[in-house]
Length: 300
Image (cartoon, rainbow, N blue to C red):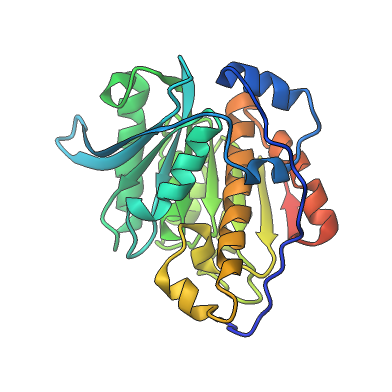
């Protein structure tokens, strides 16, 4: 992967007003009644969250998946966003994103699978996990709306998400965070995806990821892709020491990049859960595309 440590990272400041809502249903009505804007999701959402660490979720196959659960206690029923890490990473690397999603009225589950793959096999495990939760949400929490599960994956974790969706995992859509593709079976599995998928990429002029173009190329329909200017691959997860060292001239910009990624993730997950399509998220990116913080936008 290429990397230019001397780049200046700029993220336009946007004035946003915190939203107040009594429940996730009230929040959904409020957001859908207004023009979408991804900048709104830069802020923490209006709800408190509960964290439950080191859950062990049993699968019918006999496997057990370890996870951290982030609940929105204000919700009687709410969508579930399942977040999977990439190579050499863990569920803890997505704690910030998962908690942020929960603050916006969506339960989230950061899961841990073998972090060196094989990633297609991880995808099949993920499909089994989603199927088990869909059938028996009480495996995680009875406040989960089992008909509104969204899958999100970073790096090679996006390969696993693509494989899970291609295997028919009962999810309403996917969000791929600077995805990297691996495995000869991946194109075939991507061609079988029938639900909407949003690709949120880093700046490929700075940090090109492996086979990222396969996701847009092979997913047959209802796929959108944007890039976030002046960001690197690790910005699509929680900040880590590598990223901080790489940008030691201005480490605060790392946090800004993280916030931009998490706002795009949250807008995408919210739109998929609320409408079942990419339209809400795509409209929310309009200002960012116009001011240049998002670029290379394409959709089919």
